[in-house]
Image (tube, rainbow, N blue to C red; front, top):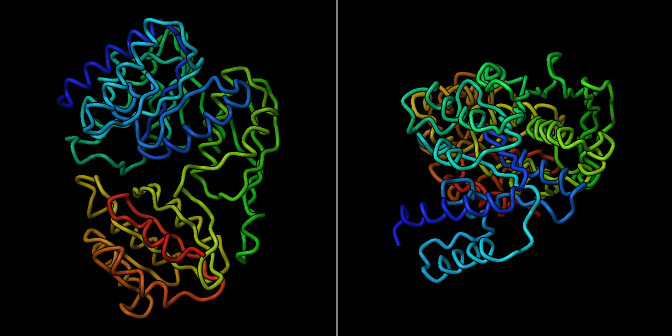
Amino acid sequence: MTRKIIQYILKYLSILILNKYKPKIIVITGSVGKSSAKEAVKTVLEYSFPKKVRANEKNLNTEIGVPLTIIGGIDAKSSVTLWLKNFYKALRLIFANNKYPEVLVLEMAADKPNDIAYLTSFIHSDVAVVTAIGEMPVHLEFFLERDEYINEKVNVLKSLKPNGLAVLNYDDLSVRELRDRVPTGRQRIYYGFQAGAEIALSDFVYNLPTKPEEIKDSGMEFKIEDKNVAKIESFRVSKTIGLPTLYAVLAATAVGRAFEISLKDISKALEIFSPPEHRLEILKGVKDTIIIDDSYNSSPLACEAALELLSKFKNRRIAVLGSMKELGVNLEEGHRMIGKKAAKTSKILFFVGDEMIFAKEEAEKQKKKLGENLFWFKTSNEAIETIKNILQKDDVVLIKASRSVKMETIVNEIKA
């Protein structure tokens, strides 16, 4: 079976299932922060609706993956047998009365034009969340320009059901400006740190570990206010730190309030929240070091946030940064910007990947010396031994890159 045939079969099976069971649907998109927001939303909703919520597994956020999530199938890749099992499962849902989730949390990616337009042609949401886009979004490789990419994301707003809700990140100007793209009759709510957000975060404090044994007590404490009802609640998340996690929590809070879940219950639910693997995880490293594992993916916006977090540590700071992919026309500028930022926030720098040569050049302008406090390697495997040798007790090591650079191999080699 060809991919196109599978795609269209999944589409029509999904339509029949959605029409029969009519679950509430939350769609999440953005350039960065989608997966963490998805997991946070799922955590909040499962607290109030146990065993009644389903979300995408891993990267099932494409024209194939999203319908597979709807039918509860698995990525069968090239296995005809597994695809037939997926179709059989869908047919049982359609022709028999089976238990089905009351809520679907569907992350949607836009790697190329019409990706989201296709999905939203048959998936209409009750809530649409747009996380962040930034000035240099990822996935521009196959888009002619930035506005075309943003227009693709806007499809999640266009496909909102009547009386549906748009949940927008107020602090990201590109997302904030989507307010005029929300269709008439739909509601809108902002989340963020800034004064214009209705779901607003304040009194934010990092609990940063200075030694590996303090990792278990690390995390963040803050308050979230729902300005629509003038209520405020204290929150705490553990073993993860950084602004991307906070924005995921804010998005989940906005969705939870839309489902009439109290701030107190949302706070309790998020006490157990942890982002997906390799996203701002705090780990113990070899030689009694601290690792910030953010190796799942990268973009200028996300890498800048990770470096900002690294700068908060008083320990010796080491940044291990890999190439950022799919930047299109922003490829050189994006890497140069990160090289400049990294040189100011890190004592020692490791750059990995061909594109990071631009970052290396910018770091050298900041008086970083190759072979002393600046290193460049073509692949992650080539960098491992040098990183191991340079580590000292209580170092804090940030590891950040796009998935194709495979920086998780470095994490696996230096974690305790």
